[in-house]
Length: 452
Image (cartoon, rainbow, N blue to C red; front, side, top):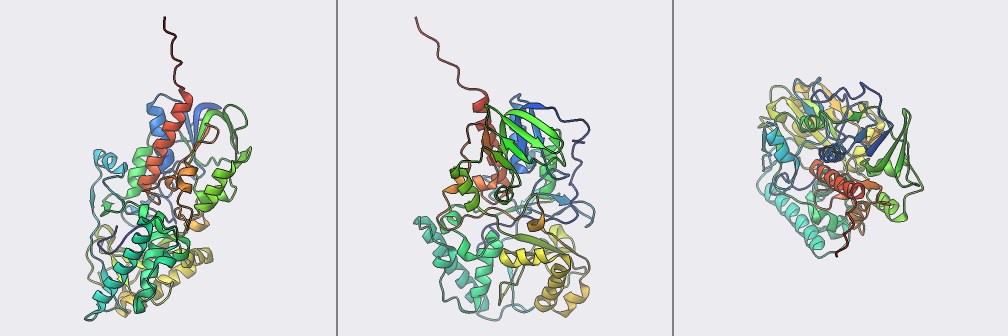
């Protein structure tokens, strides 16, 4: 969580995408035509699956549609004078996140996310009683949502939320919906929200994207190789790409639920209704970074200081100040507003950033404002959104999606993790789980010998 009054997710974004570390030279030789396992996607789940399978001595080919590994966790090392996460930035649930010990062992510097957010009301600090009113509204909303989730009530956050939050209704709706989950309150299940593991988050000094890039080193990844069709009608699988066909005994599929729902990858025969329904139910929200240069520290902000801005409408943002101690800020947007703005293009996104800075931080900050870089995960054809979110009644679909299909197709990704959904750690853990499933298919139990 962001602090004592903040919870849940922040992921995704992309503009000029540059790996945070050199990534292997994956296209130096033609891909082999056969392997034990084909892994579709080189994000956190695909990297985890490939690492586990290769460690078990299995031949693996990782097929990545984009021109770099990392999926929705990638850093730009060119445009900011420092590695800047364009996607995932908060390292959630450190005690349960399998990437944390790997990052520390590799020498990455991890540090705590500051707990308390600064509240702003039209560029000023809150007057007497305003902070208490905000904190009370947020706490009451959080308690109502979690109480419903703990009781197993598959209702929406909108149905659980108190209706008497007065001036703070729009602010709380944004924080609990668009910012925490990338969707509107009516589209988020209280049970799914309750299941999310929440603790104080970490940041990585070198960027979260750098951790993924490091873990991808040495893996047999084929970049710019989109999978178009997976035939699982036989005993194994036949995976088709524009560069050729690969035969394997099993496939680990890590594409986002939005990509799968769009039919970008066709399955022959079609997936069973159980998995198809799960994919449809776990649709992706929208979440984008507007990365703004504010030199001179006009807001006198601390490094990585979170802000909350009192909102009147859904057209608002959540600032994170001075990322890593720099002059760069995130203005994060989510939900339908983020989807519509990103679809409209970079110019409207940058115009909103300038308007937001002027309205919420004041004319001094607006005059200091420099470059703006924007991201657009929702328009990326190989991502198509942020992370998966279960609507009311759909929480159980995460485990259904994680079930093997014909023992040969194994889905992985944050959408298949109950407690770490919407996180890089959840995606990584799911890749390891899918690899274990594939290994059991590749290594059936030996028949017991007859006694006597």
